[in-house]
Image (cartoon, rainbow, N blue to C red; front, side):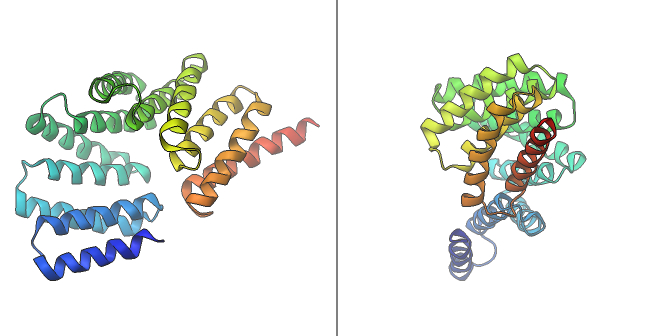
Amino acid sequence: SEAEPLFLQALALKRKWLGESHPDIASGLDNLGSLYKSQGRYSEAEPVFWQALALRRKLLGELNPFVARSLNNLALLYESQGRYSEAEPLYIQALALDRKLLGEEHPSVAIVLNNLAYLYCSQGRYSEAEPLFLQALALTRKLFGEEHPDVALNLNNLAGLYYFQGKYREAEPLYVQALALRRKLLGESHPDFAQSLNNLALLYDSQGKYSKAEPLYVQALQICILRLGINHPNTMKTLISLAYLRDRLNSQQ
């Protein structure tokens, strides 16, 4: 709520000073679209991302890293909505562009590898997802070292892959590492820290370890309400998970 008017004001000023056809306008649109996506305002984010992509293609051509960024952002949006068939070709285009323009060992390559792997994981295409997750994790560690938020993200997503396959023993230490990293790097009020709490809670919940899961859900929910609001998709998911867990506990009494 504090960021939105600033993004809109910045975009209006850029349009006034630079006109409609300038790369900085596309960057401003990108920022606004990312804000809407982070709030779960997907229908508002989509046309903004498309405007940014169209403008970058017009001004910069197809072979440009910023075009790859727009493709990745649109793919992320579609993946968040479960529109997997629309997201996949955008990720593949973005990855090919990044590799061609930036080389194999670039942070953008690691990011898109991770995103494409997550898409495959969401579709149950686990054998395709795992090598991409491992490549992304190895590349991120090589580029940034062990203590970086992207390493935590990669650990979290690899753990998620194992969780969905029922490989709980492999998933738990990765979730724990991701949680510890996010606590250290981002603090205990960050939405990504809440996500790690929720994921570890889901793992314990699935194993019937309800006493370990419940306080993690509660902590995650408190952070989500404070930082994202009650109507955000992440808040609602955590709230529903906690409600189901407490229902199971009540039925056992």
